[in-house]
Image (tube, rainbow over all chains, first blue to last red; front, side):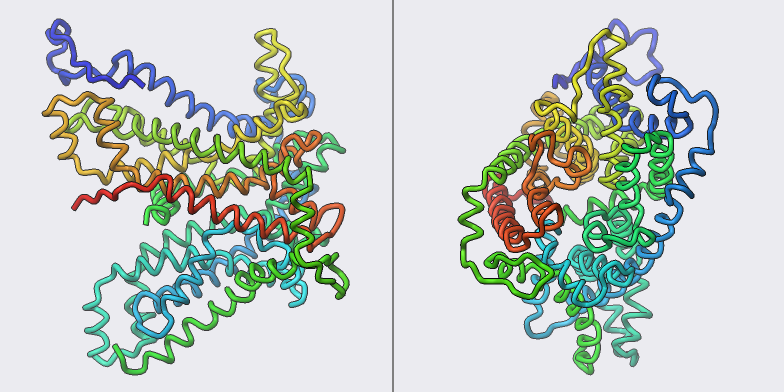
Length: 298
Length: 302
């Protein structure tokens, strides 16, 4: 990393006098630009390749991986969507995440609000109990969780999955939103209370709208992590494949591709699963990046 | 704020607390209890076997093999990811020559930042499948590129000598973007005056980086270290989806060992929970160690 400060040589400053005196392209810069570009290529090329391959037929995929598809075969997509049930899994994921995200946000916001704004006994204990859950990987709790869910009769049900998603999203949500509610000005709440506003009304009418930026950030974060969740459904939704979520379906598709050798179907399935998420990300890039990173900076 | 606050506290706190207690806290706690039994699931009878599971675990070669791989991940993944993340973040935020005090990003910073983050929003399963296809011995991107240069590439995921390292590379690939953005955000928070002062004093770029940027970023690096360490001890979905621990257990990790013990060919829940408990303490001590090892005086700028 030779990022030495190399001033532009005076000889070259003559003709290009209207340009900024410092030149952007030193040797060091070409070198490091190269690396930046290389990494950009490394992140985009695989995704681009999968998208292109989703239009190829099996023959093209197997013999010429770097080639372009001979035609836009949307039939691959149709096959993946219907025959490989990607459409069904997509719908299932949407139902589960819609439910769990609503629950997460409701419970997360209310709990965080209480932690941030009210004094009561054992507040710290409860808070750390909640937030402590962030520390440990989910798989440590997998075995007992399986039996908790089974004994509640919720195995292989969307209700069960929704409850579990919400429960495992709470630590981060509470942590993030507590910090956020603390930053909101105290005076507004006091004024509202003096004006005779009740505690419940205060929360729903005043505090919640004020917390919107924080709520959006954490909602996006939770949406992504719940949408991409794999290990929880893998354990809790075994069996009945009509209720599987997208990640499960893809994993199964990749496995079965070994037997059916339907490479184009697999690539089409991957593309269908990948593009919406990337699209949402590109649209909300700023919020997503700050939402995903802000929590870790606290 | 005193009048009538308890109804609100109770209605707001109790439902989340119950949900959390039932599905998160109680499983973690039960894991400890189950780990001292020989429970095979599906029947009620579980005999307490004391610490037998842990003794067996100590003598289990498969466990040690998996732990060895986790240890390698723990040593390699955080260092490489943080180094790459710092390098790219530096380039993107202060690699350019324009701007105040020479602190500006290179051209195309916004695009790079957008693109680097791609893997972060994708499911681990998608990432695993994509890379499995890239590593495919015949039809994969990698080997067909090598073939163009007349090289017969190895079987990558099918070769016990390379499989683990291929997975490890994907782990770094998937994580770097996140830390570029994380470090970038932290760099933006450093006041520009500091760089101006350094520039006036004639500090070179590398000196500025070593003496100013990195020390001021240390808190963030520390956080990154802990997160990556925890990720390195986990990492099991990636392994499961890419190689399923194979070939011949060469890419096995402890999380996968636990999963297969519980939900794989056999259902030895007691033993699996014992592995979970060991992992629990390992994760805890690694986090504490990472915190200790990287502790420095906190620098705050007002």
